[in-house]
Length: 434
Ligand SMILES: NC(=O)C1=CN([C@@H]2O[C@H](COP(=O)(O)OP(=O)(O)OC[C@H]3O[C@@H](n4cnc5c(N)ncnc54)[C@H](O)[C@@H]3O)[C@@H](O)[C@H]2O)C=CC1
Ligand SMILES: N[C@@H](CC=O)C(=O)O
Ligand code: NA
Image (spheres, rainbow, N blue to C red):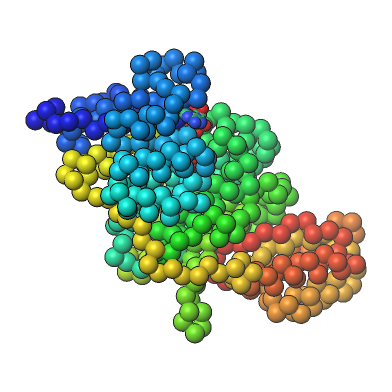
């Protein structure tokens, strides 16, 4: 009988947007959880910072001493505090004591993942973190388990709900940046410090986790080239629209194979123009979508809610059930897989394409001067559009693929040409043949 088995005792650390939903769903359906795991699942305590802010949590469960809760009689620690400390110390404390961990904390995993894995390995505890990337979407388990027998070459997608919410609104309604960010905060999508979202730190942490799992290599957040959306202007959105494109913040993790067969990993997060016909262009609101390209499986697409309390709680609870099942049968979840240890390629060497919009003098020879600058840097041009006259004259150039450093130097040089009044918009182009 399931009820006769010793319960799986769970400590919940943090009861904010996600923690509240995890607790609600766990308490709503105890019999379901018992039936799925093979033992009753019991929350033994909820660590919070300000007890008076949680009137709905049974008062006998509440504590402000998270460390004492971890040290107590618990089997699983669910960490939903966020940030590096005290989350890191609390999880190391749990893992070293052989207590399994479920966390949604991408910032922590992207910086200290190896330390946490090592502690889990040493004590035989589990560490699961499906909620850390793309919220409710099952993505990490497919990478860690379902695709473990395949060779992944590329993972690309939209992994930050807040910035997708903002960019989608800017594109469809012309809404302002600040007001949309406030709305994303109210809806529970934004991080406690929303600069983590808009400056790309959150997406870079997720890219590090994705690249690590996809390429069996330790990739940390500092290995990921990062640009956020705070520099994206209504002018950039309009320039994209004029060419049948839209702007998305993309995370791109690729296996790069040089001519001599040497392999490396490229991981980057930046805004990019993609064609409106591309499947990622239709991903609106706070939704996330990720393409995985694997050698045998081909192309797979994962789509769903990447942020918000309930969707994220779904992934946390899926992990909790997995950990509890492992405890019931004395099994173990997947360990760290970092055997490939590929080097990380610098952004400057990564092949990219640029869309450049220039405000230029309406004089003969402007186009040839601009074209000569591209030529000097060995960057070839795919599309040129010259529009307007006099003060309104503008030039739009879309390049073919070139190393990012060459494209960057070309833009710097073009900005210095006397015939160029202003570099209005520079953005990478993805999702179309190079
Ligand atoms: N909100 C979302 O859509 C998603 C969030 N996540 C991750 O889930 C985690 C939690 O996020 P949210 O619930 O949105 O954050 P939140 O800010 O709403 O909740 C965190 C809670 O932890 C509490 N806390 C802080 N320090 C504490 C301590 N020392 N002891 C006990 N409690 C403490 C805070 O008072 C707050 O109530 C973060 O790692 C976040 O990155 C992951 C996916 C989606
Ligand atoms: N702030 C994050 C929350 C989920 O990871 C986002 O907006 O995607
Ligand atoms: Na997920």
